[in-house]
Image 1 (cartoon, rainbow, N blue to C red):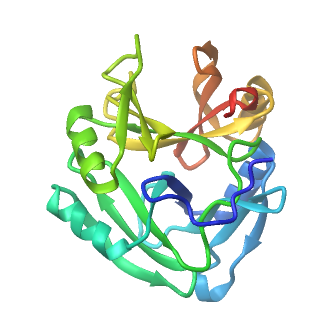
Image 2 (cartoon, rainbow, N blue to C red):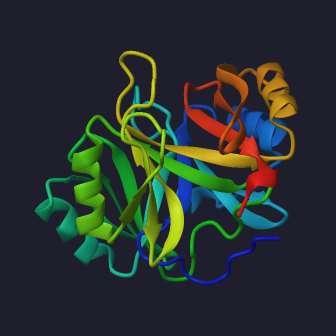
Image 3 (cartoon, rainbow, N blue to C red):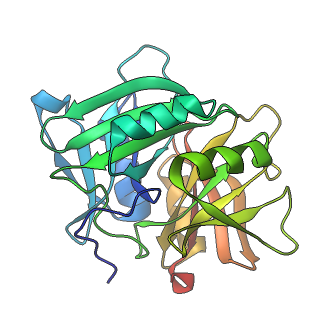
Length: 257
């Protein structure tokens, strides 16, 4: 089992969360689809809820804090100095949406837009590293940055987080993988055939044992299917939209590294 107990290397996707208008409904949906259990952090943290798999943090769900706030999964990249990373973001054409902020003794975070208009977060670990399980059924296995201009994105994430990129032969929209200290951590490319009107976004993929069964569970639980199960060079995948409109991918856990 891929359990992680120390701070993630800087530049690595290390946390993922979502804000929704109905946390109980979100818990019901994701427990049915990904098998999560939940820990409510209480009033002091607006009932921000840690989603667990096999007793380890896999993601988090919180309430929307502003009226009409859209629901979408936010991917956070690790940093060993959130304030320095925030300065690099601005210096390289990004925009801070949430300035560096302490989250009790857990860590320090900020939220930003990259120069292509894609939202992402930054997490500096203090007592909480972010996700504690990955590459296992019900946990994060991959992230893609789907950008309006992949070249601009690669220049930005290279300058801010030190990402290096490797082209993927035959992939569309200039898609490439990115690595941190020589370890492959995700992908980056164009919008990759997303529906018209879609905005740049980081997309999370969760590992599952059975993609087809997971899609069926998602439909029963009130989700919609954006891309039905298909076999790809990366394994069997599907794209799901939760009851709040947030999209995420699932991929057969047998392909995990």
